[in-house]
Each structure stands twice: as C-alpha cells, then as structure tokens.
Length: 309
Image (cartoon, rainbow, N blue to C red):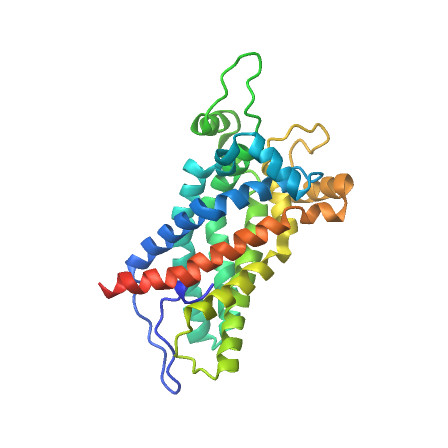
C-alpha cells in the first residue's frame, strides 16, 4: 500500500522528520474506501475464492456456475451484509493507524528503508486486524458462503445474524473466532508483502523517472505499484486455504473434528495434494489488486480532497 497509510510529512534531506497527528478524517476515508472496494468487485471475487478454497476439486468455471445457480447475481454477494461491511469498516481504520505509526518509528528511529518500513507496518497492521476484528468477520463470511441454504424437512433456514448467535450459544466466542491464527498468518504475510512490495515498486518508479523522494507519484504510477504489490502478495495462498478450511461449514466426516493449523494442513495435503494449497489463487489476485488500487490510487485522491476542506 502506498501513501494512503502514511501519516507523516515527507522527509527533507538533512533535516529530522517531523511527526504530525493522525488526521481523523483519514480513518473515515479508509473505512469508506474499504466498503466501496468490497461492495463492488471485492465480495464477488471473495465468494468465488472461498468456494474454490473450500471445494478444491472444482475449477474456476465450475465455481462461477455453482455460485450463479445458488441465487444468480445476489449469490456473489453472500456474506456482504453485515459481515463484509463490518470487516471493511473496521480493518481499514485499524490498518491505517497501526501501520502508519510503525512505519514512522521504523523510519525515524531505525532509519529503515521504505521497503522495510512498509513490511514492518504491514506485519503490525495485519496482527491488529486479525485479532481485533477479522477472526470473527472472516469466519462468519466463510460460514455464509459454505453453509447449506437448503431447507431440510421444511425447516426454516436461519439468517446470517441468527446463525451467528446460534454459534455463540453452542460454541462460545471460540466458535466464531475459529481459524483466527490462520487469519493472522495470512494477514501478516499478506500485508507485509503488499505494503513492502508496493513501497519497493514506488521507489523503483522514482529512480526510473528521476523523481525526488518528496515528489508525489502520479495516479497511474501509484496504481501500477499497487497492482504489482497486490498481485505478488498472493504467494501466501496456502494460509488462505488453511483459513477457509478451518472455518468452512462443508460436511466432510474426514475433516479434523477440532481443526488446528497442522491437522488442517495434513488433511489438505492428503485429500488434494500440494496443488490444493493454491486453490482460489486466481480470484484472490483479483481481490488483492482491486483492494490495493482502491486504498492507494482512489484512497489517496479522496484523502487529499477531504483534507483540503
């Protein structure tokens, strides 16, 4: 991710970097841009990605066909309300606050490079996201996509919130935070890669074009850096498949009764081999690229407009 998560003034060569307070308006921008991202292309790609990770024998075409058959266009937005909106509105603010503070101290106290600062900020932001909000919301999104919506014996199918409270009653808070450690692994490795690679790409663009450090990149340059960072960050797809499998409501008696990261990893290898660990990587690249473009390219523009007023 690019300057959208930075809350410090540019470094002037030969002078100490001055920290300024975090503009609270940026927290709103982060939340709104995340909601925009997930409501447009984000959730449809997320649904297909989750389907492939949970049903690893299906092809991308079959995943689209099965999703369409469950409810046409609306089926691609399963889990959007309230879980995806709740996740989007909280994780954007958390990421901005945490990663920007870590980046500042890494730059000011350790004199680290922008790439290292971005990676460290991504690690901190990923951890904060995972354990504060994303354990519950990613679990419930996965439940919505993978649980059966078919009525059995004429019984009414419970709604999203009803399902949530049912899980709370039966399994407690651990039930809706199932797979949170796998979520943390995905977020930490994903965001550290995404921000770090995006920073490295931005610096490379500056060098190629001969731009000084304090000169802003053009929109197309930020989008290019974000696209590369988002796409290459998907090397950690095995963590995403682990997360989905641990949170899935799919009926399979061969699955571990009390799944851990290790037992789930062994189960996936035994049933679908190494390639099973990378199922859903194509739509996930789309999710990562679109999320990074929204937060970097569009987010920077909106942030500048808001902060001018």
